[in-house]
Image (cartoon, rainbow, N blue to C red; front, side, top):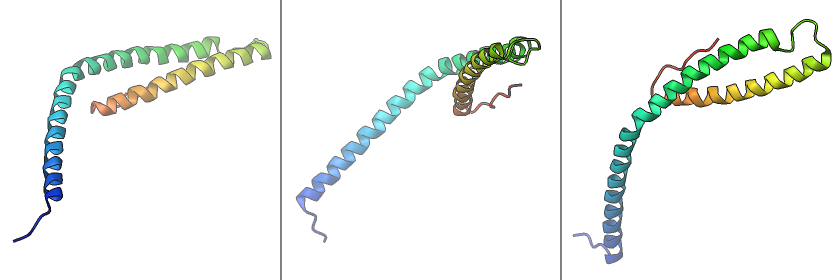
Amino acid sequence: DVTVAKEEADRVDTLRYSFQKLLSNSADVQTELVKVQPKFKSDLLESVSTYQHAVEHYAEDYDTEGPMVEGIAPIEASDRLSVFVSRFDELWRKFNTYSAGEQLFGLTVTEYP
């Protein structure tokens, strides 16, 4: 026979109870995630579609109103460049967010022009 101290037996009981509570909580969280997942996925797909249009407009705007348009003054080109860099930074942030979301949902990461 093996003698186990009362304190250790109590710790085992506490550990068993904590583990069961953790399992119960994880099941509750999983159930909640299953409920909200379709809405988040739908929102993501809608945002990606909107983002695709924003990228297309950015490219068009850059070609027609960007800093490389012929005949504008250097200071105007510099100002336009600042505006487009700012817009690009915002698009890049969204790209990273949406790509991570697509990966999270097991979707193919959308390619952009």
